[in-house]
Image (cartoon, protein in one colour):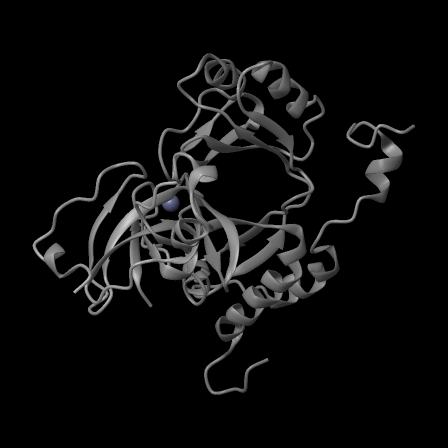
Length: 212
Length: 99
Ligand SMILES: [Zn+2]
């Protein structure tokens, strides 16, 4: 039987469809450059592993050795080796992410680290996709549907929170001054993609002309 | 829209939370010993005060942790947020409880 979790399986790689792949053209058309510009694109197939462990336990220390540390409070993201990033979801719950092209088994490494300790390690790469919303108007678009405080004073580069955008639960990760990564669950990707496109429309308009 | 302060995540919209009913309702030590009336009291009977009420809330779309909150059912003022298992903190208006 084919090992579907093995990313080196070329046959499986060829069959993958990203949750918002059908919106790629719309994202490109809806994106605008310039001083009020905002762009949207999907960064598909990031590796993600959900981890539940007490960071103070021996198992937590072993997991931290793999991830390069565990975040201690809401908003924190710990950067690890080889592009790993660990996001704080709760006091004992974390999301470990890695670039899409990571070939070695992230989940098996973490399973081995947890060993017989209390907690869980779950391969979640297919659970969420990643949107990148960027540009000078990115924050204004998010604020149409997200009530969390996104002012740079409160939401700084390199932090991530779980919150709601347009009524759906997401992980919102600020990766640059004007760049946000949004991680919706796969089944919400279509809705969120269209919601963001709608919010982006006004910034594509030219004064004195009808909306595109 | 109410703004609740999650002990882990800080101020967030009410829609990120779910309500868990009255706080400090202990599970009976020996449920099998209870009469039907006593069991129904435990299952279904809750305070409905006009004023400060101790309630359980969970930050369901955030850190997914439960906590207790003292909320005024008239003014919607939140008087205290405190951990599960901790005793109910005293407030100036607690005397109104059950009034
Ligand atoms: Zn929280």
